[in-house]
Image (cartoon, rainbow, N blue to C red):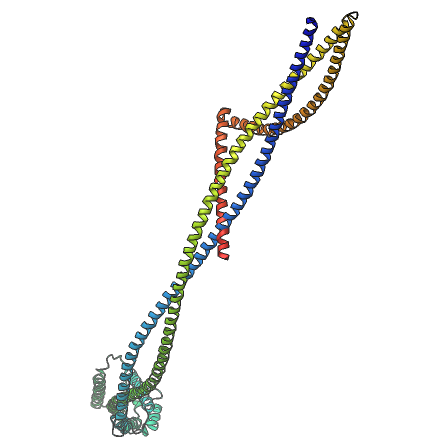
Length: 602
């Protein structure tokens, strides 16, 4: 009995131990499934929270962009208003300068008016004096009339051109006479055509002019004498005589020498005749007629010289008188021309003075009209300046009000931005915490999957041990003696049947449990393997990229991989921080612009 109870107790203990192991395995699997479900739910919650945070961040970025746009629009409006204010100030300054120019122009016009009035008075005085001068000298009893009467008496009613032609004719005739006298003195012969010239002069203009009566008489005397043949026969070869002053004396000496020579020749001839008579010769050596004729010719030459001297003196006196008269006529004509020019100048000055007076009157009228226009423009400018000042003051008040509103809105937007920034930082911190929790949950999940696999391996080993033990128990039951007592056989048979039924039920239950556990474990393993595979793929890709970058950096720089990894991690963290700050700044700028635009639109 004790021997039979011992295997029963052993089987019961083994069964209870197996059931406890199964219960613990089921509890562990349930706990692991519950943990996986809770982690999945937490992951979904985290994803929903992250999506909500991203939407909120987008909304915040939009608001920041609106605020930035509104700020930019307000700044543009401020710049436009400042430009308008500067333009208005420039216009006001230009108008002030124009007003100053108008005032200076008015003062200059007043000065010009004073100068023009003085010029007008002086021109009136000059016109009066010129009028008195002209009336005094052009009256019937004036000096000009007396001078003209005297000139008319002296000129016998002849024009200055006639006097000028007469003087030119006298000068020409004087030059011709001087040439003939020089020819006679040098060649001792009268030139050809001299008598024709004298005859022409005696019949010409000199008969009409009583001033030339002496010259006409001398010409007639010269025409009455004809000593050309005697002079041509008796004169010796001519000698050159220089000097016009000693010409008369030389001519007298030469004539006296010729007369003495003739007398000597006559004396010599008479002596020859006396000697011939003494000798007994009767001859007439001296031709008395020819000697008398030669003597008379030389006497006529002397007379002719005297008459020529008288003619030259008369012509010189006449030329001097004519020159004096010409000088007087020239002076009178010059004086007349000067007086005519003065009269014409006075008349032209009077006309110019009248024209200038008319122009001054027109100019004064134009100046008066321009002054009126300038006064009107100055009044208009003053009105425009007042309106511009009022407009500038109103714009300045509007600008101050808008600046106050802008400052209030900017302060409000800055407060909103600070709150949004704090909220974003809090959300970011919560996100980091949740990421850490997720990492921890993944670690727990991996550890739980490892424990599950170990428990599954232990469960499989326990199942194999149970099968071996069951086979051994069946062999022992078969080997029992069939010849035992009926009760014992019956009891053993009943116990064996119960054990067999229980074993069959347990086998069926174990198979169902194993099937369910295997399906669950396979599903869980598939899910975990998929998650791990994704993570491993990402890690592999990142590891490959990092390995390639590290290899290139190590090849280029020659540094250690760990040092390069640390530097890369620090640079990545710094770049992330910089990108995050730049993104935050850009978001805030865009939101502020959008808000400013909305405020400007409102």
